Length: 128
Image (cartoon, rainbow, N blue to C red):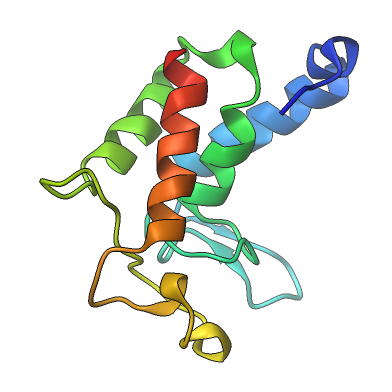
């Protein structure tokens, strides 16, 4: 994905990146006031579609910013992702949305082509 290099290095982008990295550091501890969402209870579970804060969604975003490639928090997140890869290099959803349970990414029992694609795309961005 081509990105606007000025926007990618902007203050706004850097604040957004820092927010996601802080979510990683504070996973399980952040609760939104007046909302029942939490960053953390199942934050590290692989889940798609990207409807809430999860490791896959956050890494998909963070992997597009070259200036954080060496951040230790990003490295921790990548390690957590890679640890979920099976012996054949595939990834299996760990949480699902019931409404999409008929789709490839909605099965917790077997590796998902789509979740594997997303995870490998993230890794490719970070290591190219």
